[in-house]
Amino acid sequence: MPQVFHRSSNSIARLSIIGAAVTAALIGAIVYIVARSPLATGQHVPPAQPVPFSHAHHSGGDGIDCRYCHQSAEYSAVAGVPPTETCVNCHKQIWLNSPNLRPVRESERTGQPIQWVKVHDLPDFVYFNHSIHIKKGVGCSTCHGEVNRMQLTWQVAPLNMGWCVECHSQPERFVRPRSEIYNMQWQPPANQLELGRRLVDEYDIQKKVYCDTCHR
Image (spheres, rainbow, N blue to C red):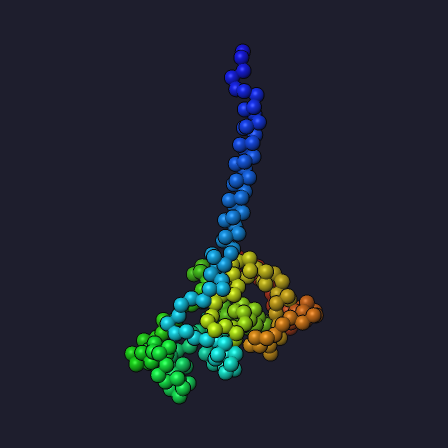
């Protein structure tokens, strides 16, 4: 019986299969990389806000403590957005007629809250308790970066599951003394692992990497 296909057909078929496999792998790798890139996570891009609030000015320059504006950070699941009254406490005295503060004055006049855009916005299927992380020695800058240097606030960390699990599985690498929680300049010391292990025991930190820890 005469040969139907040319001898080169086998080579072409093999190359086609290899090419398809390589292409599929490349597409998968590209999707994986893009899904974890700032393009998808929203990192490093300050969202437009109704008022161009500068943490660098208020926190870094004026030395205002985080808790003055985020009063529920230590006691609640959410850090809380400061009400207009918190802004007005100071701005009834200074920068009264600044055009940038028009939304603040309008909010005070009408009683309607300022529509701030949330910077660190976790999906609805993720449960996160702000207060427990502070109690366990997780500093503000660990998640939020050095906001005291930000003219406009942006998201520093990717906030994806891998990033959370990294800390949950090895908390000794990230925790700090509670006295340093609000210190934006704090850096892990050379003996961080030794310090971290001691704090893990002292603060009764458990390595919670179970699904229902965050997905409830």
